[in-house]
Length: 225
Image 1 (cartoon, rainbow, N blue to C red):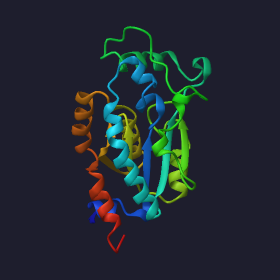
Image 2 (image 1 turned 120 degrees about the vertical axis):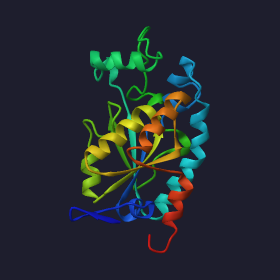
Image 3 (image 1 turned 90 degrees about the vertical axis):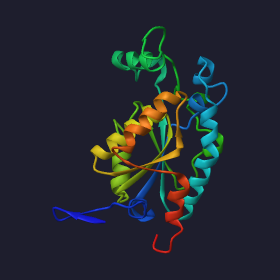
Image 4 (image 1 turned 180 degrees about the vertical axis):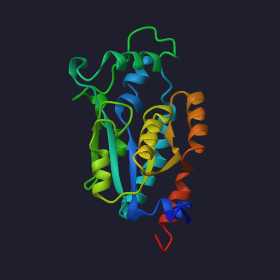
């Protein structure tokens, strides 16, 4: 910890990820994004990378619950008949799923009540976890996430999930803008586009603390945690 202008600033992973003031955020680990037969898979995206982070994220979640960390799941959802999609959002989706060409039909995903909206079975919420629904990339936009975090005296968000360059990075940025410390767990985030995943992690390393899950869990096992 250092002092700047009379303010105490956390600078080590041990200080940042202390269970008493941290929340573990799981971003959009849902069927449509991560599982065979989901929207991305049916579109032809390579979803194999999402399955590789599931065991690591599951281990991180169990370790976090074991030390009393607040676990928050973000759940992307779309209202029926496109009621939650503005023209601008539709155009965003067209660009995001077409290598920036913006051609073709926008991808439909995580429709309310559908199988695609459900969480990956191996990573489902457990009693005591919080689920926050959202209609946009950021977990903070138009949701109760900030209220939940402040109500539980959270100072740091530990961000995991998918996709790295999309909802993960958007949530991390808005967390900082709401004055939370941000730790991105690099082996527990993923994208079906390796180039964008790599670029996003490069960017985030210059803005947030980035760590691997084993290092995060190691801080929780120390006596002072």
